[in-house]
Amino acid sequence: MIYEIAMRKYNPIIVMMLCLFLSINSYADDRIKQIENQLSVLATDMPGLEENVQMSVSGVSIQEFMRGIAEAHKLNISVDPSIQQNIVNNFANATVSDVLLFICKEYNLSINFIGSIMSIVKYIPPQEKLVISPPKVLKISYHSP
Image (cartoon, rainbow, N blue to C red):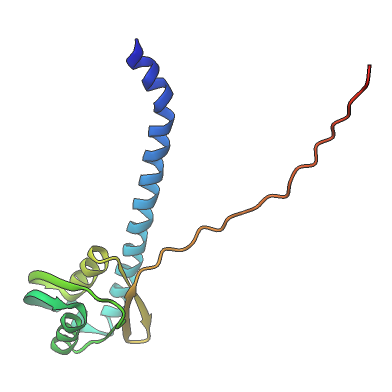
């Protein structure tokens, strides 16, 4: 009986939390999907994006890791110097596009595309706009007896 009362009380809260989590998760998936689509479009002009990566690194800065990929596959990649992230990864027979997607998702990064240049930056989620509604004017009148 107590369990049923508690479940009725907390059930709407659990549902709201679940919806919030799913919406945040789907937004992150949309962001990664957009990057994937842009990489697919670029792959027609930049065949290096479809080449396989054979690389194992441990404790390497993301700047050096990306520089190695860019040189090996003739790509134009720039990494924001404010990103202070060391990576430990082993990639075998993964395409450059897949590696870039993985790095973006794993380390919360994004890619800005400027022509043939890929600029890797920290992902900053868009701020929700707070809509302030005007105060309601209540029409209240008091009648004295």
